[in-house]
Image 1 (cartoon, helix red, strand yellow):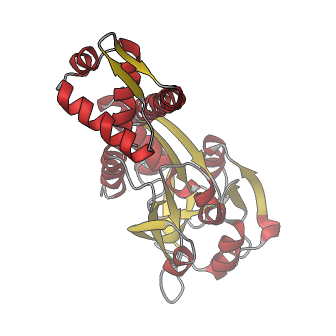
Image 2: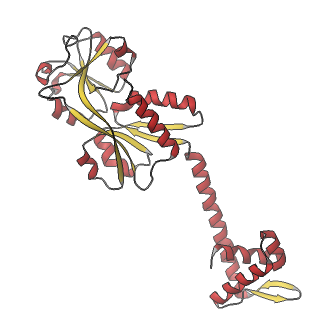
Image 3: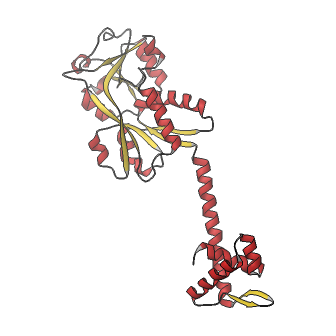
Length: 298
């Protein structure tokens, strides 16, 4: 039994006529009759009694027809739910990101929304380690995360695409003794006061930069407060070279981004992540390209 045959027997039962049911479904009466006969042979019963007075369901046929009505209704509800989901979500994106990309994503969202006013967003920041470990469990369209390829390979059902290689830097204001330098080393920063973004990957930062946790004077997720403190004090802020490159305070020189260097730059790879089973929608691909344009701005 297939859905087409179920639709045939339900309509024949309602119309009491194969001819009228066939006309309603825009098919030939002979084609409908043959299909119903095939179904009767398959089930080993007669679904309809045929007589000059019309078509009426048999006892067994009534049972089959009642089940067909339920199945057709369920199928219709499933299709409606799927269509509703598509209509609701085809222009909605759920984006998960490490704090590194927050400012660039804000820029991208503003520009993208000005050209695609019907698109809506759900934007969430998380610690990079949490993003990698929990991405499979959450219904996000894609994520931006700093990580090693080895970390990503451990996760199942994850597709990833390399989008950038960045290096650790510090951001300082004009009152900082480091402002005039072209680069700094971890040794230079031993006694520096530090401000931290709340969702930063603290343990990875501690390991790479060898910073002293006792020197952290502020932890906050308010970027305005963080950068105001940097401008007006000697505190430093760890970040990546592209994190705030287009921010006005950097462009006008109130804040300077200085590479962290020892024998070499402290580098890390950045990735786009999405579910293998879900893929990327056309609107998501369009947004990601816009984001890359912002990321690659000189």
